Image (cartoon, rainbow, N blue to C red; front, top):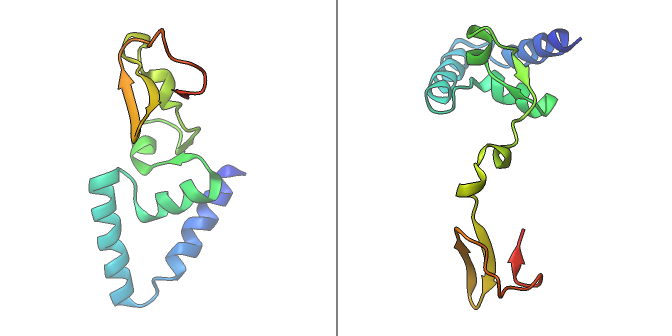
Length: 108
């Protein structure tokens, strides 16, 4: 089912580029997007449509085309986690928790 929806989305996106000049622009946009984000224009559309991380680069590397988004917070080791607190005019972050802070000043 997922593959059918991906193929349908890609085909519908491709139908917008029937004119040769539009095809060139779409191809150029996909190349630039691929170089900067490792996703083509179609990948960005599929990521939006399925709310998953879709990338042709992942597929070429033998992984699933669309994967669940990784939780970036879980990748940060605990010793590198920052403890942030509200201060006058902004937020201040420290490597170690402030023992004098309250729940009202802690930024989660």
